[in-house]
Image (tube, rainbow over all chains, first blue to last red; front, side):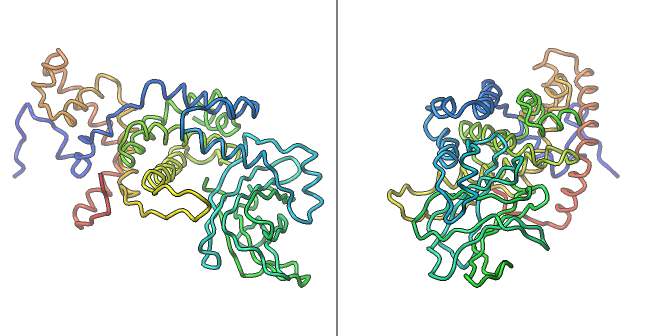
Length: 210
Length: 189
């Protein structure tokens, strides 16, 4: 026989079982600061605005540091090695775009000490890719790194670089859009004329997961 | 909702405020559940909406915004925790990777969904639920606190819990199954 709860006691615990404790959880009921809404709207509006206003806007310690790093990466374009297309892309204008999305690069076991991120945006002439990598070893002589936009079965090159000049930013372009090629990868290639990607993958990023 | 998603997907700044009002409470709940400190949680929320806005053009309008925002928030919170725990190093040496132990994915999703369901309650029903669960008051005590008849408390409580049960049915089924099998996740409040 089911015991009736006291008349004036909460009628919820039996029904909610395991979730009752979460209904009692302080954080479930805590409201965000009242000013946070305006802060979010202002932050996005500033990002959508001119670069100078975004750079000078934030003085709130580390909170703005990440955003400023993104702007710095995009603004301090290092010409990708041996790519004439990059020079033309610079003439087209390379300011940060509101649709730029940053993705963390996942390093493989081939380069366990390396790290980095990639800014990608789909533009009218293709996908613009800005790499910021650290501790990626220079490609040995006779080899180079190549960036790819891929599906599970197919891929399009976004350009090549060798990192013998040290860490820094690299701008690349691909003649496709990320909506159709949602996987980013960097491979180590041989200078053998083979245009297919090797299986020596050093970095990957899932472009559906910012 | 479709219009809101489309406007947000199109990168419409005015849609940001609408999206924040709809999902900001739940995102803050997730953030605070993971990082603890309310100021850090606010940072996580702001960064989450920034990242979502940046990626808006690539968001599939046929998808629900909530799980997408939730996943961004969770990853952002983990990044914040790592940065807070990482020892400061100068120079160009590699950063020390710090293991992060936090509330499990499933648990933070539960708190996210509960917060959303709570936010959808009418204010008077929401308050009854809050006083009942968070403050542990019985109906008589809730009536005294709110200055209303106990019969009104009971009816509001009944309606509110019906709404919550409907909204959280899939979670209730999953949670009660987990209880039956005595499964324990790596949760950490």
